[in-house]
Length: 298
Figure (cartoon, rainbow, N blue to C red):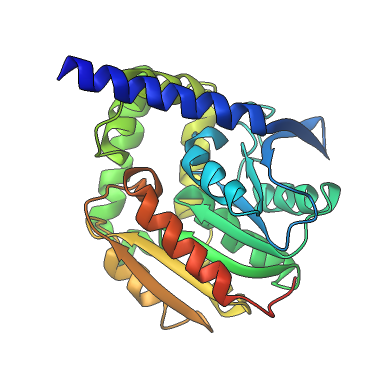
């Protein structure tokens, strides 16, 4: 077993080395002394650009299995660290999805991205909804919302009190001991066997977000704005990808009643980070969705 694990780890390290060699890093100045760090792979003249937005406190590196797959398929792939996360500038204010939506627009404009599939996971789904509410769908060919319904804002206090209670308990645990909470979080959102080094790296990146900022981000993501009306503005095809274990699966299903053109894929044997737990299934489903967008231009 040790030998088998050792070979698996060596293979993962080799894959990581090849991926890093093909991945470029950079940053975009979005104003107010804020720089958004990004990873980039694939040709700039690709027929499609995939722009990945990660979840709360998590860095762009969590999408590594998608970067490797879609770069090999000939796509241009961009993953960003949202403000106050990973390698991006930490700010004490202006950390709401609406602020991050402006950052996404700046990344698109300054990197001259085109034919974009905009993909948001968890907190990133709120960022995508905020982007659509402000900028519409004209610059996007397709949307992907991964394992998160769009926030109901303060209405969730009345409509989903159990969910709100769980979030508040999590906030308390996070504020009292950020390293312990973040490590538990990483082990909760990933359910497949993962080397300790990977968890350690995810923890390290997530802890770059100061806990006071992290609390503010979480509250603004979930409880300050009802972003559900923006779903009607998703004027391009939308893919909703959910874990079968998601406690919010019903809410994700309900989004299809409002989204103009959407379909749902439910992935088994995966926790919240469905694309990490089941990368082959996720990548193939996403690839099929991208293929279906032929003729859709941003």
